[in-house]
Picture 1 (cartoon, rainbow, N blue to C red):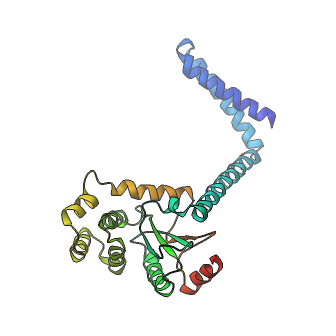
Picture 2 (cartoon, one colour; picture 1 turned 90 degrees about the vertical axis):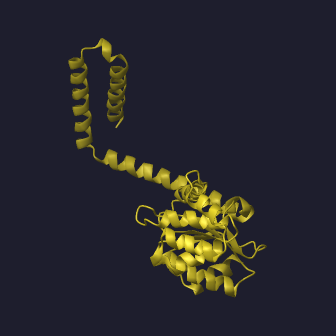
Picture 3 (tube, one colour; picture 1 turned 90 degrees about the horizontal axis):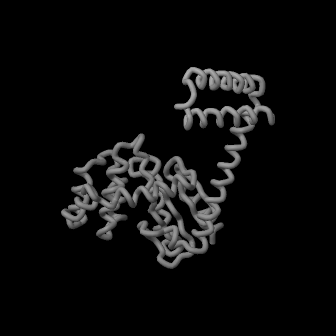
Length: 252
């Protein structure tokens, strides 16, 4: 094994020297040396493929450990300093509850639309027991209207109408479009000039704010929506009211 890494180091050093000092060596000689070392390293890899597997496994373990550390830090903040987690995100429900439910959601995701109905039932039954926090996670690669809808909802939040706007987006999920966003803004009596500037303006802050939520989701290793975190537990996908109530009871 030591010999393998010795070859790797030698190959890397010679390659680097060739890059830095290549002007003083004949190109053909440098190419020949690199080729011989490459063949030697490849031969070692063929004879010891377990080295690659071990390296990949070690890397995956390190990544998993880092992810667990990030998640633990997030849960600690959620427990001891929830406002740090909430930031500028819209909230609804209790304003004094120590139980915070963080939702990562995509307005074009059908599972998020189903979860939206369940969360409305939860808040209606337990109005003073939980604070719901909405975090944007538009899956733009598969949902063309996810980001525009998120920007429109962010703009509505600047005028204190996020939750009404959110409800309209999920209710009319199959009609997501700029026309729907503008019609909804009108129906909520929003300042249309400000709404358009916030949602669609060239220098809109909406995309930057949404990007912060997306970056948080990536740090936590969240790949799909909806995704929920409540105190020390997380859950995702289509959830039943009874399941969330059970987690809520444990949290209390």
